[in-house]
Amino acid sequence: MGTRPYLKPPWMQRHVGNKMSVLFRPSLLSTLSIPGRRSGRWHSVPVAVLEHGGERYLVSYRGVSDWSLNLQVSRSGRLSRRGVVEEIAVSEVPVAQRAELLEVYLARYRGMPTVAKVLRALPDPADHPMFRIITPARAGGGGPPAAG
Image (tube, rainbow, N blue to C red; front, side, top):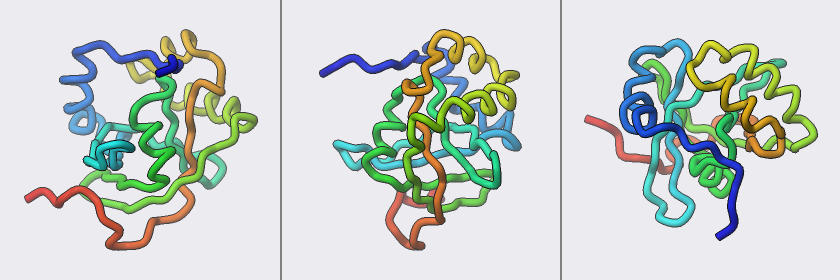
């Protein structure tokens, strides 16, 4: 298995911060749920959806993360924000278009604890998978079981 550009978050962020972040920043963060590329088991992670130029984007600011690899394979997932669940389909943003989006992402989210530091350490736009949310996916297209 080759190496991939990825800055793993510290233990506390992975195991505590990620679970609590959507509680403390509900206006800023959504939860992305996607099927695993090998297991098919659904995984959920907090994400900041970037809105720019009338489009919405998912930016893997830490580099080639597991969620970005899963999304490259599935091309669809589920976004949850403030109790509203949306089935989404995505297309990958070409590398040539990523630099501008990274600048906008940094300007918008630099106040989040690790964003500026991580983007300084991993400055190449090619190291950051990005996805444009193109349309809501077909309703009823599978997904994690509903909580309740």
